[in-house]
Length: 189
View 1 (cartoon, one colour):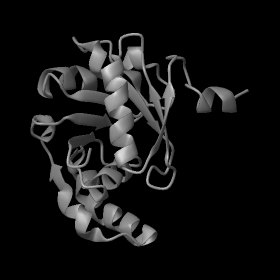
View 2 (cartoon, helix red, strand yellow):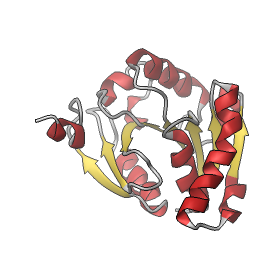
View 3 (tube, one colour):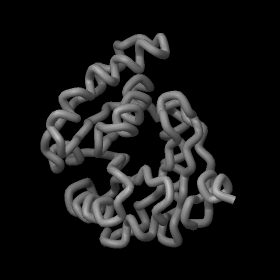
View 4 (spheres, helix red, strand yellow):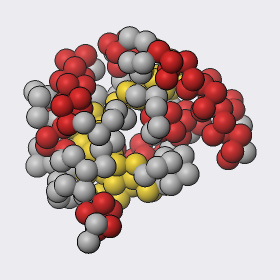
């Protein structure tokens, strides 16, 4: 499943690490951030991950950085949103993704607690919206909760699991869209 077209929305705390894992695995990655300073600092932070992990930086040639939202998602097969945990912000991003990303692109949210059906409620085709809850830092913790909502198609779940595995992640399929999913819901008890 290498060489997929991946877009990452948000180059901050989680996004740059998510982008790095896909790029070094051979996927073509476009990164977007609404804040120019965050986007400008992303290449150095991503190179630092490779240094930390002793990885060859050749895979970083798969990365490109974009200040335009539509340009960043124009030909994506997968979009991984890594914006702050604000429901309204994530809903706005997904509404834009529903209009700007290709109609068959899989739209993934890196929320740690917001129900997936809430994040994707403004997307016309909610069958392509799925949760991908990475743990911080995403380049060190391989676990990713893949959370389906009542609307997510089985094919979207399967493809998401495969691309995560291809990037060296350990996806776990979460079949119930409950606040906190498995990890955060269990850790608060």
